[in-house]
Length: 355
Image 1 (cartoon, rainbow, N blue to C red):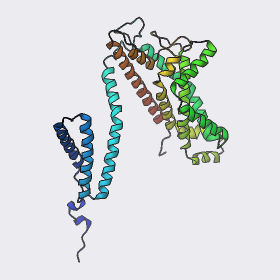
Image 2 (tube, one colour; image 1 turned 90 degrees about the vertical axis):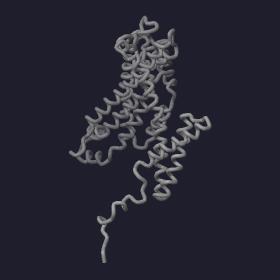
Image 3 (cartoon, rainbow, N blue to C red; image 1 turned 90 degrees about the horizontal axis):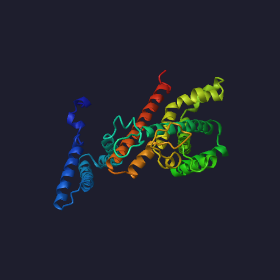
Image 4 (cartoon, rainbow, N blue to C red; image 1 turned 45 degrees about the vertical axis):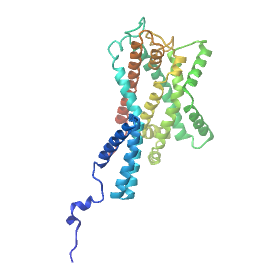
């Protein structure tokens, strides 16, 4: 009696009942080509119609082919994978298109003059956005200095001290409400507050920072709270067992363990507010000159600069639109730079495993 081992099986048996590796790509090309040819006969071969009808034809053909060769179970698995991948591509397309268009149009005006000149006494071509860049950095920096400590200590209280008390429930409720308020409401709140204290019509960078803080604080609270909850309780209990006080356990164990997530949450909160236009239109205002004093006079910011360049173009219009696109690209680069710095900080100071 002979026993057939797995090593003696022919190699074709391992791939039996499976479609070749590049079948899906070939089928997609064929489906799109057939769709384009058929729709062209009827004069309806537009890019959108070819993609949609071709994708549907591809799904039907692949389901039938996979079901015949691999079985209905494998065919359903392929169908789910292709549908999920398709929706991912659909969701990714607007983002890629936006970034591509911003880079293509923004690079036309991103020169040394754009980063070294303001719009003071500039009509038409020339000028730059150095005043708006400084304004954005100053206003966002002050908003971060206000929001991060408040949000951090609020999250620590909610996770480490509050338990399930009514005060904690009320704080979480109001944080959720603040998360969903329109940005213009925050701007009107800050404008009303400064008008009441300093008089009507008061515009300053500090007022803009207060408006951004109203939007930034709930994001910081929510993100930091979730990161602190992910810290295992065993780490806290081990620290308490050694006689370490609660405040020192939080400072030396909990916060370092959650540092990577906390930094990510802070960066996300900065990205949430750095591009806000409505509250800064009301509070910080706009100016053509460089103003680095956040407590006096209007202060230009990049979102407001882009808004005015695009909404109130002069004659000719092209220089204004070019400055608007360059300002938008600069804002994207600032956000990407802050994100890179945040990831570097999180990698540097996060606790290392394997020690």
